[in-house]
Image (tube, rainbow, N blue to C red):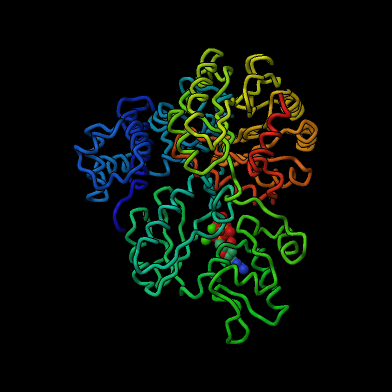
Length: 577
Ligand code: DGT
Ligand code: CA
Ligand code: CA
Ligand code: ZN
């Protein structure tokens, strides 16, 4: 459909990176690195590149001649021959195997050539036959580890769920492409994705248009379509090349509110709403809130909630866990919203080994958000490759202080992301840590200790006088790596007692603390901080996902320290260390 966008090109490069890594049996091969560099260059470039010639493309930092040619091939014809060939050699079922921790491209090749493994089922069978342990560099332990990883990822069966980090970019791309059609007045993703569930069964998109045939035609021809499941007059369902299902439905513009409400769910929330309608002698369905043949409300969700005498319930809270009772009563929380956020307090620059944008660029980007304050929190020295030693940190402080003079309205704090060691120890020493204006302490390793040990470890960090906040509480990567297991009540008690804030990390792979943990923390009065953990200027949008996750945990504005006015916030910061 339509023309390719930068996002489409980046998705194409991502696929090239994945498949070429398999082909070349290394993520460090020259070709893979060339695609990676091109991707970073295009992201940093920021402008639309789809109209550029091959020569103009190579002027972008990181884009080589051969990649430029592939981008042109893709923009002009919607396909890249090289990629088409790789797709034949590495079908989606095989590619899925590369998501399993412990299965690098070399091992995958061996699995295929020696054991004939082509998909997860085949791998399961090989494990059951104890065949994996016979491969070079493998053993019983790695065999068991891989078996466990398959279970954890839920990679088999019909109820395979996709991590939100993978579903969201696709949904955004589709919705953007649909909104670009002149026959479309509105388009919104709904379902579990709009509710900010951590994993997604399928993507539901609702489109308002008076010309459903045009919309359906555009969907059927979209370059994300790998296989059509339903091709109807107002509904199309298809599978992407990764096997993720997308349902697109077209509705009358006047019924868009009722339709998005219905398809956002959750099912339990819908049932409770419908009962409330019935109690008033009305009917609620995907076409509207109806009294006989008369429409009470249908155009917007807000109108429907209002007609049912309810406070508007934001999508992340629609899980039927008390939100309807709260919305009907007087004790609706004053929820945190994106517009309340005044600063980002977990924020990397290229001072960190994994940071990809300069201090100047990162600060400029934060200022463009209208923030009143910012903490630059590059990694402390304990994080081997990514961290900075004392000298480097002190130089970094000078760089930050100098840039501060250019931004009189935004307080830029010299901060640090401290690494919580296996026993709760932190980087540098107490005296050096006191030099930081602000700190976030996080777990980055040793995920396998006991609950008691992990709890003690966190509490030791929380009790350190230089720690302001705890970053990504469990260290999980949704669908890829479980986080540490802790005694939440004990940790919450320590957070409250030491006046340390709990981070809601907005990176979609993390969303950590998770929304259910946030809700428990809120009940205990734990202070929160919502951060992007940005490592590049393109990642500031994560703030929205952090806020939505906090809403899903019913977080009120008053508990979120980075919604506070600057004077109140700085007073809280200064009380520590
Ligand atoms: P998922 O896809 O498994 O992550 O979860 P959802 O919530 O996106 O579920 P899905 O895709 O089956 O349906 C999308 C929404 O449509 C769902 O949240 C509520 C609505 N819906 C689906 N089936 C029913 C139903 O039988 N009754 C009612 N009231 N609503 C339904
Ligand atoms: Ca769904
Ligand atoms: Ca669905
Ligand atoms: Zn970080």
